[in-house]
Length: 250
Image (spheres, rainbow, N blue to C red):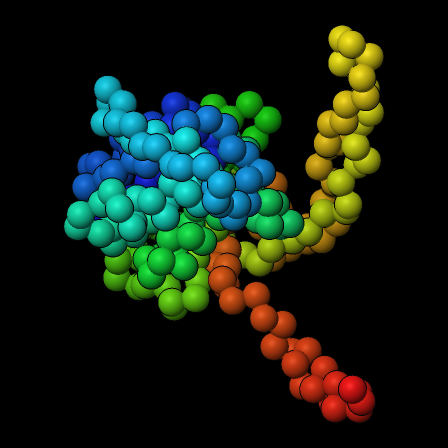
């Protein structure tokens, strides 16, 4: 099995190193990741500047771009043979509910699927993010199962693992995305020259976090596995929109 491993925390992040160590036990793994932390980059591409790839002493490839750039460059230029699977992570922090819209980790997986590869995003959920090995073990087991039970062509997997020792993990649950209240307002402050600057506020609290959601599973000690569809079409609205659109006159 040939795996392309990327992330959004950067090529030097602990999470990608731990996951690499687990995956090389049963697969050929090529690490291609951003040269810096790109958390919140979502599916952004670098269009106005050239991309450069540098091979580090440990064999990892560092890219001066986003997570999406890294995966795209890896598949289109750097990997021969092509990967059988794209894995993104282990992210330093949760990618639950609405987080997936902003996550560079999920975006790296999505880009792999856009380019025809099955893909999985992996995140470690906790305040201190210490048990990366737990997330790596769960991800490895899930990947082995995916070899026998592949996802449909329009889907990826979003895996969130609570930050606990492997023996304290209660199990794995298949979940849907929950959602949060809106994020807190941006914070206004000043730099040393008294110019106004702004910081994003804290993430919103969980709003839809009941049983069956990814929030609920992780909060109760379970790893959360959520299949995500890449096709964002709201099919349920198409028939209704077709009816009222037919009444428009141009």
